[in-house]
Every structure is written in C-alpha cells, then in structure tokens.
Length: 152
Image (cartoon, rainbow, N blue to C red; front, side, top):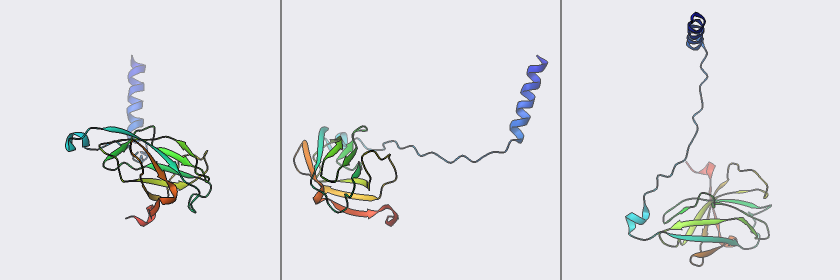
C-alpha cells in the first residue's frame, strides 16, 4: 500500500511540474443546417449528378471537385467528392438531397490526378445544373470564382 501511495504521489508531482505543450485545436465540422423541408413545407428529394464535357483550360491533368452545401441542397456525406478527367469522364458520385432542384451548384476545386490525396483546394467553381432528379453539369459551362486567398 505504501508503494501505491508513493507512486501516486510521484505521479502527482510529475504532472504538476511537467511542461505543458499547447495543443492546436482540431476543427470538427458538423452541420448547422436548418431543416429546410420543415421551414419551406417542401419534401426532401434525392438528386444524382453527372459531370460531362470536354477539357476546359482549367481542368489540366484532372479536376477534384467537392460539393459545397447550399440552399436548397446538402450533399450526402459519401457522395460529395468527384474527379473529372481531362476528357470529361467522372469518377465518384454526386448525390444531393434537396427541397427542389438547384439552378446552379458550387464546388471547391483543385487540379489533381485521380489518385491524388485530399488536399487544400484552390477556390470556388460555380456550375449550371441541367435536367431534373438525374441532372448533368457541363464542365465547359462552369465559371471559376474567387480563389480562397482572395476571399477575406
């Protein structure tokens, strides 16, 4: 018992005099979205998107796109990242849950090949949506918005 009390005492003294290293806060992202279906009185519907179109100058070796949630839609967690090849083929799924079909949607984007790991994106890409529940986005019709470094 004396040994246990001694070890506890030593542990407490060590903790009291130990250098504390500041810990960088980790960012956790949780949805703070209002229940748009309840607020608008409209029902949720699932939408599926396909990206088409040939190489636009900014596609280069490929384009990684991350859907940015915005009214009237939010992206389903496993289906918001897609990769578009220079010849317009898409890898990944784009599934949204919306209270009505959006006219445009925005992505965070960056140039990268298909096997590239997730990394910081370049900025915002806004694209018109064509179709209904199974919509298409023609990459050649998308507009490059501001880069993140330009946004304050």
